[in-house]
Length: 263
Image 1 (cartoon, rainbow, N blue to C red):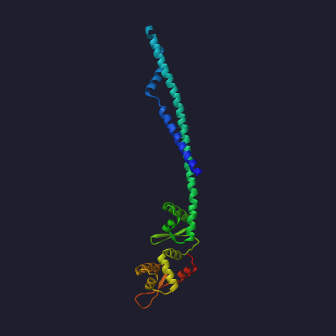
Image 2 (spheres, rainbow, N blue to C red; image 1 turned 90 degrees about the vertical axis):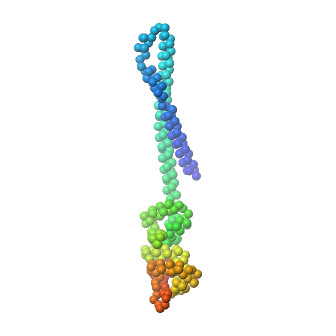
């Protein structure tokens, strides 16, 4: 909170200094009348006095005095202009430095906040191997853009690995398993329906889709959809028997993985 207030104060002061310099630059610009008066005051006045009659000497002296006053005023304003110009430069420099300092401070604070988020991502992925992007987003409650950014960095650094299964990308830590089929099994088991089907197959051994549908009270078409995916992944193997429906059974490596409870 203290650093937030300090940064806001620095940025506010910088804008005040910048405004001061800009106003000084505007006010210090001499008008055309004052510039011509200064030029006339610098021209020789003795030649004009030689042609003036004695009767109008007082009037001429008044004109000279007026011109001299204008010259002094122009000189004073020029000095003021230099002062304001210097002030503007100084204010601008200070303003730029203050804004730069505030930007660097904000960037450092963002970096500090980024470290805990990456640690949270690693912790959640470690505890939930095969977690997919949407599930990870719900678990952390952070912005999706920030999550994707840090996931790319973690994967580039080799701290996590990912596997695409269907339309979803699933994440693991490198020490989970180097076998893609084990990773795919863990990714598929994140689905509650698939996990229930796998549990049913592990419990009953040889079973049919109709038996799974009745036991889990799930529509047979949905069971068929997921069983087809498990057959393609090699998690389930079909068993050749006489009849219209072929039973399925867990493959040996899949049963070993499920029994080991690696996911």
